[in-house]
Amino acid sequence: MRTHLAAVAAVAALGGALTGYLAAPSPGGADARRAASSLAAGPRHLALNMPAGDRAKAAGLGYDLFDVDPDEDEIASLPKGAKAMLWVGNTTCGDFEIADTGAFAETVERLADDPRVYGWYLSDEPNPKECPGIAAKIRERADIVHERAPGQKAFASLTDWEMSPLRPSETHLDLIGVDPYPCRVDGDGCDLGVIDRMVRQADAAGFPRRMIVPVFQTFGQTCADGEKTWRMPRPAQLRAMLDRWDRHAPSPAFDVSYSWGRQDAWACPALADHPELQAVMKAHNTRRRGPAPASPPTRGPGGGPSRSPGGGTSGWGRPVVSEDFDGTEVDTSKWLVYDSPAAKVNPRTAKATTVKDGMLHLTGGLYDGKDLSGGIASHLNQRYGRWEVRMRADAGTGYSAVALLWPEHFGRPEKAEINFAEVIDPTRKSTGLFVHQGENDAQAQRTVKVDFTRWHTVALDWRPEKLVFWIDGRKVWTYTGPLLPKQTKMGLALQNDQVCDRGKGFCRTRDTPKWVTMNVDWVRVYGLPGDSPPSSEPRSPSPTPTASPTSCPVPTS
Image 1 (tube, rainbow, N blue to C red):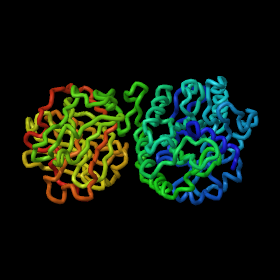
Image 2 (cartoon, one colour):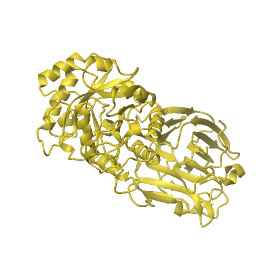
Image 3 (cartoon, rainbow, N blue to C red):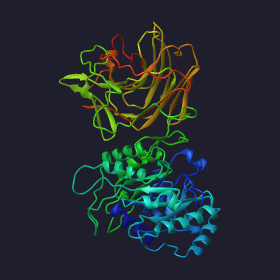
Image 4 (cartoon, one colour):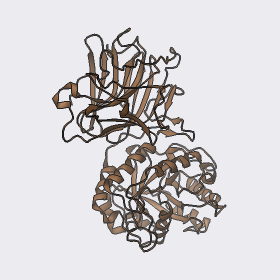
């Protein structure tokens, strides 16, 4: 095992190891530039501590970024399509692998034109408190990379030591690894909140989300000779970890699995020992993604929006609604919580609506023996604008996860409805898009294949002349037909509907999980500049007094 991999493992016992980069600040600049367009194909995937003999197998699992020494022959031996992350760094306060900056500059220049070099791993968990000069040393090397090898990236991994002295303006890094590990030996569960806390720490230190490289825990220490703090996650726990990271960094430059190989003192067992976890990572690494958004979603240090992920945001200005569900309950000054358990169509209970862990949870299931679901509707209504929702949904027959616009006053002046996600498919592998209008409920529709058991950002632009539907920054439908609403103000509704009223085939079955939840991470709403201001008239206590907001046919394909 190479020395630098052992150092990476030692760091991982404290908080992790990683590598990556997406945006390159110019030398001496604090602001990041846009990354190379090749990133639009989706993130790369790195598994640390991998022997050369395992690389072909790992490539079959979707791993396509490998940490290697700055050696031409080793770089050339990588699997087809793979790229190299070159270890030249230090650990904490230790010496750099190439200590002399002149020799480092010569090495960078020698490999500057190699198309298989992705970037330079400059430091692993530097501790600015113990080594006050470390930021300047990293900046010196990052500037050499930018000057001698434009397009290659300067990367360092950070743990939960103080991050602000290492912010972009001080280090000129392109990407940072963030390495919380949720699964510990002192419990059977995994505390996913450590991911949230460390990402917020990076936010507060001034790192934009586009710089963050997620690090996934794929190691334990139950058979290690030294540290025995961490426990190997089970497949369901690893999937939950991946989902949580999808909320924070849905389109990273790359991600990291620590660790692939065993390290006697720090990582034992590891991913190479667990085929069932390899299967989880293969599904993650090889899933289809749309092009990376031009501006990935982030929350600023105060929780507010700093960039919009849905695509096509130019010209919308600042959001009129920015909801992150960071409290412990729904803010009823902004939202109506549905509570109509006796309704014949889409019966709902307020018990199904909760806020926890920075998310809205709408949970369908049997409440006191009755099949009910939940939902909320915004008190804010406007004519024209843009709506964005980041959401996912559990699979399960009997429920439909929906993000839609519903009129301020149904039927006055027009009967209209726009569904920019209606995921009635029990497997959640496709969504319907619908435009409804008129007394006879005329409609236009499209179906888009996308796996909503994973996090996705859906968005709708409503302008006087058209509707544009987006998923993860990809335009999936533009509607300009006669059903376009033009008179009514509309507001956002989020619903996990019980849909048994549609017929026997839409009711809960013995295979449906006990609880089926739609999760919403955040909402952004924009007004159309220069148009009439939105209104905030409270919704009726009965959300569907005469008709269901989702009484539309099932997607046909």
